[in-house]
Image 1 (tube, rainbow, N blue to C red):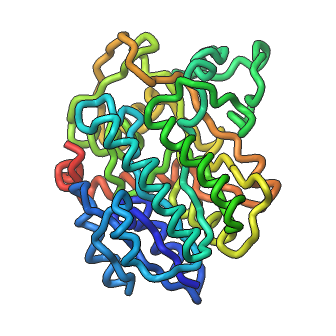
Image 2: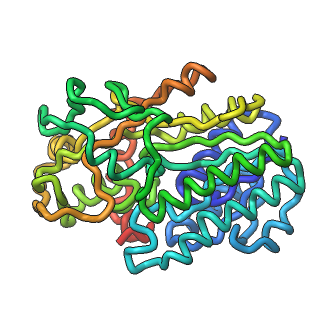
Length: 355
């Protein structure tokens, strides 16, 4: 089996490549990356040492994809992954759209031409910000907790957000590009009869991530805390009670290995996250870091920011039922892995371009 991974020099792409080679002995991996992120170069030589053929190219350029040989499957891990993309002054809305949606359209043409299957890595940020913000919360142990007695919205329960949760706009420019990519992937797969899996990923976390405050928050927080860099709680009273769940890329690779061997159902759209058991508030994460690295208090800023939400945990019950997949890596093991990387790489945020 030949597999093309886009964005292969990124954290997720490179970890998937290594993990899938370990899990599928008959697999040949080809990668493409535009090396636009500073940290991407750190993974290039490592990928070559694993025998992976790497093309320096950009998914926004169809001619770059035309130079890639035919593959049986594509995993689309190339994206501008920040929810602030398009409004943060570092990328324009057009750049975001060309990268996240235009790049996916070019990959769909590649899949149509070569009859290749697609695993599209989407995002939990396709879900409605208005409806997420309206979820009833209470505070327990320095963390927002869903108030189950007051839930009146479809697609949410004690285990988290399901695939039935609203995707009505606004979802952020970033979320809109991912949702549009999902729609086009399903339409292409149906029209041209190639398999499509859509995995709506939560927060991915692990050692070696190019973490920033906007994405890769678990990795960024540990590195910044240990280096005594400024940390800030924004919005929601400035207390750091907002909650996300974490997923290790090796668990995502376990799912991808299964999907590469199966025919997807008609609507193969799945939430893929760490779940309630792998969730933590920023305040709780700070307390974990205080115990490991010594005390370092974040600044408090009560002012609300665009696209901030108080609570988002993914319910992965559907993929567990359909494919038997569940995360195997605990949040504590993920944090321990990152902490070891922090100790060995005290200058990581600078080297990886996060600062």
